[in-house]
Image (cartoon, rainbow over the protein chains, first blue to last red):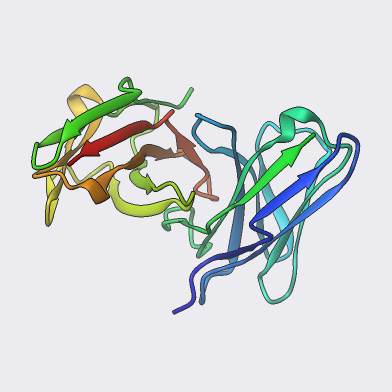
Length: 114
Length: 116
């Protein structure tokens, strides 16, 4: 049973650049959520995708956007990178029943913005 | 507003000691879910347990046990006879009430170091 996978594992970018992170959900899951975890902090919800649409969004600027594909995989795009975007980006998958299903996380992508 | 507080930033114990990680939450809703996740140095959040607000039974899984008390809005996690492999950051989380997405609200995490 394949778990949640994310790519790449590490990424280094410079300010102003754009980045795309990828996530494949756990087998059987149809919903993907993205979280940002700054160093020493708990993860913060960015947004969630279900049926290729954004269902809910956290307190993040429009520079953060996403996409979900018909096979349920997802991308997180960040434009005009800032130093403060340096963080671990975690993807979680679940079944979109009524929000009560457990979210299972991938290993994350560590983004460093110089 | 919904909030999760893990007051213990870091805990250090010697192997075989018991250790309890505290979690206090705030919510206005009567239906909600609480979670514990473990984050080893590799970074992946590993799911440990989910508890709904109507089930206050304590749960035991091997060396792990959880104590849920609605009266004090606490959901504490105890590791019995700790081992070096238990060293990690542990997060308590609350699913946002009324949200169909199950958005998680995390505490700041407690770093547990188990020394041999």
